Amino acid sequence: MRLLDQHLISLLRFFVFIFGLLIFSLFSCESEVVEQTPETVSPDRFKQVIDLEGELEVSDFVWRSLNQYYYWQKDVTELSDSFLEDEESYKEFIFKNNDPEAFFESLVHPDDPFSFIEEDYRDLENLIQGIEATNGVEFGLLFACQNCRQLIGYVKYIIEGSNASEKDIKRGDLFSGVNGVQLTIDNYRDLLFGDNLGYTLNMVSISNGTIVNNGKEVSLEKEENFEINPIYKNKILNTTTGKIGYLMYNQFVADKNTELNQIFGNFKAVGISDLIIDLRYNGGGSVNNCVALASMITGQFPSEVFVQEQWNSKMLNFLSKEYGEESLINRFVTTLSDVENINSLSLERVYILTSSESASASELLINGLKSFIEVVHIGETTVGKNVGSITVYDYIDAQQTKNPDHTYALQPIVLKIANNDGFSDYAQGLEPDHMVKEQITDFGVLGDPSEALLSYAVSLITGDEITSSKKKYTLPLNKVRDPLMIKRQRMFVDKKINYHQLKKTLN
Image (cartoon, rainbow, N blue to C red; front, side, top):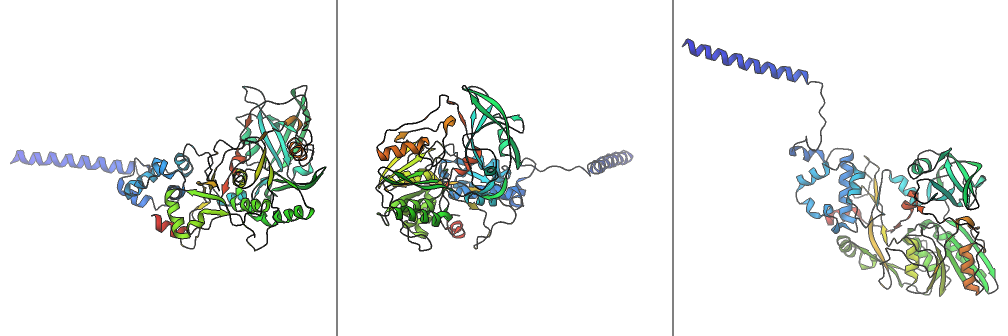
């Protein structure tokens, strides 16, 4: 009996000791915060996690949107519909991809350099309408030498009414630094495309084929929400064979339909015999605007199919069922949306100027018109963007109210567009009939008949001898891709879709 009592006392002491350790551990860790990660959260938590505000909600929006609209949805394993078969597994998948921008990039198909995610949809809406922060200098960048990291910039043109239009800087000028810092492939994004609204360009010149500092500096200030007029030049050129209409158009903007129609009304009134459309700096834009411009150039093909849309299979089924097969077709039009008659020229031939920056809706105009009239393509091979996009918002109800918890939007590629002959395979670009490159050392004045590309086109029309006044020195250097131009190189469809009905149909 005494032995049993001693045993019980020993057990009691042991439990008291263990309890004390637990109390000590509890109080000693009272202020420690344990970060929750996909590895530390139990599976039971995922049902709650997906409903939390913040980046998880955005990641869910990213996946569901790409799963519905993305052109390559069936070709991206992680966008498979099978992910929705197990709700808990899907939530775990979203939780492990809580950075929406990195998640978006991980879901983009290897053949797609154009889709992007925008943190603030207001910036995207402004970009689509040609509204952005700019000082008015439209420039390109080159490597300053072979196998080096230094860059030089060249001015393509100055935007009218901008800060730069009041400064001593013009098309063809060169610069090598910003605020006294040499431009390189490592710093040019921060120096030229950063949040700083003001900077000073350090200018250079070419002397005997060598780039030299000329001591000139140009201080510039960006104006926020500056509305850029995409109609850069329009004029009548009087030649020995008749009047030629010239239009330099730098972005397809649906709001410019009426203004373009007025210009074509003037072309029609003076009786132009030929037309030159300059798209060398046009990265694309609205399909609606492209169809309107094509209809102004022609006019003899009312209601004919200009281009046909090719969506992913689930979107094709939805659009055909809800809106009919006609919703996938863009036809030549005779009136604008406000019932204004189009001033069409009924031309059988048009001359189009391009560069290696011409993309999307610019290429669509060329490809679409080729099914109907002769398109004389002059310049360089185009980008090869044979696909279009839509802006996708995170709508939360049938009234298409944007989610108040975040401002993310997507601009994913959702379709290819083919011409009336069914041709859409120009991902390598459209090759010109006449290869003519701008010479940076002899840019010339845009719209002047002596400027290289325009002079070439005019000579083809008039039959005059083709000449060019190239200076002795050229710059056979590689270009650097402009990150802003990449965003401008887009083609988007102006399609009204009931997104609430779409979600109910596809989910």
